[in-house]
Amino acid sequence: MKPSTSYEGIRKYYSGEWNHCYSKDLDDGSELVVLSSVKDNKVYRFRVRDFCGPAEEVLEYQESDVGPLDHILKRQAEAKA
View 1: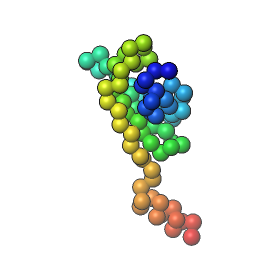
View 2: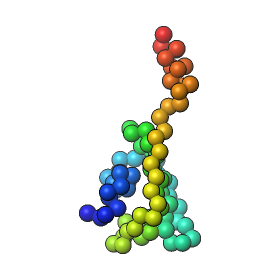
View 3: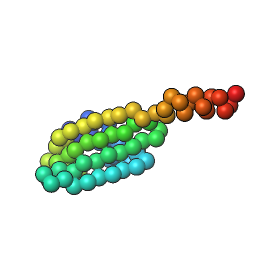
View 4: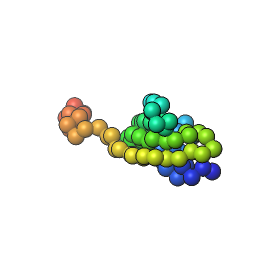
């Protein structure tokens, strides 16, 4: 097991538990990956060197919650009433 799999977003990448994936090779040789998971209402953003390789190294890691906005939830509740 790679040490990088201690990060939830990277674990989800390897297991395929994501809805959208964006990746970009950067000039410094690292790769920027952004995953979104509708099931968890989260976005995972990480920058990794040697991604999926033997010397994989996580350089940056960030998780963000992205649930529905409050005004949308309020309008949905009003529509149901």
